[in-house]
Structure formats: C-alpha cells, structure tokens
Length: 321
Length: 275
Image (cartoon, rainbow over all chains, first blue to last red):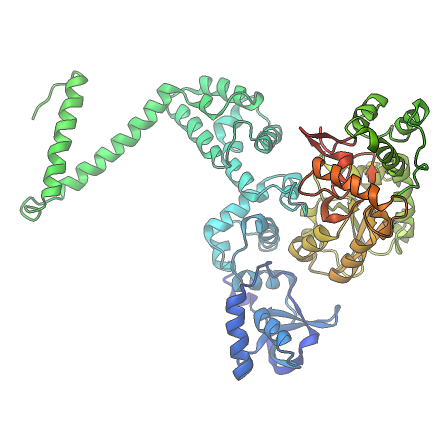
C-alpha cells in the first residue's frame, strides 16, 4: 500500500522566480486566509524576506509555475510588490501526486466544500484501488472521520452530489444533510422493506427538510436511526416498518411517530443495565480503607442504596441485603 | 426592455388580451384575471405606469430560448454535431440547479434545441460532480449552461470555490447564458477563467431605474420603486440592484424587479418564481 513517500515530487533545485509567473494550485482547497496571520507573515517577510522557498512545479501547458506549498508567502510577496520569490522547483506531479500533496499540506475545508474533497478522494481511491479509511487517512493526512464522511457522500448518486456543488447558495444543500441521512438510507432493516426505494426516500426527505416539515435539523436523522435500531433490537420490525412508511409518505407524521414505546423501554433498559454493570465494576475496585474519608462517595452510595431498595420494593422484588 | 406604449394608452380588453398572449408560455398561467388582480394592487393614479411596466417586460419564450441555444452552440468554435469534426472532448453541464430545478430544465431545453436529445448524445452531458473525473484538458471544452446572470456574483464566487478546483487540467470553460447583464459578462470574463457567452446581453438601459433607461420618467421610476418596497423591502429594485424586467418562460430571475415576481401577504407578483 502507498505510504506517501512515493508520491513526493522529485526535487530539481532552488532559484528565484518572478512573482507574476506563479499561480495557486487549482487543487488547493479553497480557504479563507485570515487577515491577522497574513499580516504577521507580511511584517516578517518585509523585515527579513522569504526565508523558506516556495515549492512549485512548472505547468508546461499553462506556461507558468504552480504553487504546491507557499501560497501565503506568495500572497504576501505580491502585496509587498516583491519582484521575485525563492522557489524550490519540483517535477510536475501527476494528478494523483498533486491531490495527495494538497491533502497533506492543507487543512480541511468547511462543510459545504466537502464535496470537492470527496471527489478528489474518489479519484485517489480509483487510481490506487484503495478504499480502506485508515490507509486513505494516512496517505492524505485527512482525519479518518473526514474520510468516512467523504465516502458517505460518494455513496450518493451524482444528482445529489450536484446539490452540494450548486453555485446558488439558496439551492445548495449542505453536505451534513446527506451525511446524516446516510445511516437511515442505508439501514439494513429499512432496505429490507419491499416498498422502500433509496432515492425516492431521499427526495422526500429533501422536500421535508426544505419545508421544515417535521424535520428541524439534519441531526433529526440520528433520532430516526435510533428509533429504527431500538425497534429492531426489541423485535418490533413489523411495527417500525408500518410507522416508517407512514413517516416517509406523510409529512404530518413527525419523528416521534417512530418511537415505539416498548422498544424505547427496551433500549433504555439496555442503557441502564450497561451503566449498572459499569458502576458495579467500578465499585468492586473501591478499597474502603483507601476511600475512608471520601464522604461524598459514601453519601452517594447510601442514597443509591435507598433508591435501589425503593425501586425493587415497588417492582415486587425480594431484597436480600 | 421593450418600449412601452405611450402614457395614457387605455387599459382595455385588447391590451389585456395582448398581455395574456405575450406571457402565455409562463410556467404559472398568466390569465387576464391575474393581470387584472395584479394591476389592482396599484392605486388608480398609478395604473398607467403599471400598465406600461407590463408593456416593457422582456419575455423570453421557450421557442425563443431554443433558437438562442441553437445559435449559441453553432457560434462556439470547435463544436460540431459530428464527433469526427469536433475539436477535443466536450461536456455540457448545468451550471446551477439539479434534477427538476432550473439547471436541469436548461440542459434539457439545450439538448432538445440542438437535436441532442437522443441516447447517442448522452455521453456529452454530465453532472458537476463528473467534472473532476472527466479529466478534460486544454484541448477540451466544458460548457456550463444556465439561464441568467445579473451581477456575476454567483458565477465569480462559484468559479473560485467550486469549478476551478474541479477542472485542474484546464479545459476551455464556456459559461453559456440565455441572458446576462453587460456588467456580469465583464466581471466573469475578467475575474474567472470562464468565457461568458450570453445570448442576450442587457446594457445599462435595461435597468429600469438607471438614467440610461429612457422609457420611464423620474417620477414614474420613483412610483415603481415605492411599490417595489412593498413587494420586497429588502430588494425593492431586484437583487444586485439590477432593476431588470426580464422574464423567462420557466422562471423569473430574482434580479428582475420584485413587483413582477414577489409573493408576500402584501404583494402578489404576476410571474411567481415558485409554486
């Protein structure tokens, strides 16, 4: 598997190049360059010049140098009207080398620009025949979570991807919508419903989200997913199928409609049981001699005992204390 | 902008019929009843200027759009319907919108107008999301299709934020617009690497509120501005202060004055943008 070193461009040498012969890398993720750090850099360059050469390659077709690393230094040089800047020229990278280098150099973009990043990742995945998130994260320098998010976006058909690339901010759909929807759209139980069709469901959710009909926020899909999961674990598949279909087809049914009482109780029980087990394990580690003076702990345990005894009595359980 | 009838021309049945006929292709039916209701939003003393405003609307019908698209494509150097005679690879992509939206409508109209609706031409059309993997280079052409640019803001911003990055191998990029203001064309040409190609270019005179517009007196412009403030307090003369009176068969741009398209409790435009 590629580690990154084989993607490092081959160095040619350092020289001075006219500022006007340089252009930003088109693969550079679009960022807003904060004025304050730029101002600090400008003052530094004004005093001592550019000490670290920019890394550039010569684009033979466009007939100018392209900046691989050092765009801020270039911007500052332009502002200071420096005639030349020092550059370390490397061989023109391949598309894959270029994309990998840009990923490694630059920080992540804001959410709505995630789609271009995802499309670049898609190219890398195809070129390298690699889909493993950990390996892609190591290669690109992206967080593994970001790689995961990008892969989710790539899972959607092109027409949805285009919605995230819409120049019109009023029409553009944020990447978050699709990322949060992904878990529901791809849920195994949901996909087993004969009537369910992913794109049709996505279209309906888009419409609902646009109208804010029963969906206040994209994170509502996490709640939808949780209800489905709870129902599945509680063996309420038929019930959740009916309710999910109603929720899909009729905007008057909100997320709460998906909450099946017994399934919710079941889920809560699992959670409490897990927390009780953790508490028991933690308490077993407590050495009373060591914690003798910790009044808050002993008070808490006494309160806990009272609550537990009370609940057990109400539940008709025998108490062996 | 079309030259309106002289001030004082009666608003009679014939004139109403003429308007209904002129605007017949709009996606939301413009009937004589609707025109009457729209006019009645104006005070009696202002009916004449409202009527002349309707006279001045530049309505681009579906047929006109098709003809414009045909002429536009023919004028693009290097293009040929015959693949063997075409220079480089070509890809036509909606600039904005998606399935069912304006962009998709534009692409479909463009395809039909240029006899490329058949399956054999499907490879020439794609999504924005296809641009990066298309790997089109300097010998190739990408044509981004859209209906309108009023200020060039969206085109310039999106070039910077989206398209430049999705086209790293530097193909020729044409932004094909049905109509655009001269200001937008100039901005796009100077601030992006796109070649703007507007079938209809709107000069300063197309801005109803500009001094270059000869058809309405200053007092009339002020009257229309005040109604614009009712129709859309935030953009009384249209987005980007464009002051336009352009309407397409499929939609009304938001750079067009809101008297014509806004929909609020206080105002019902004749050319609603949304259902």
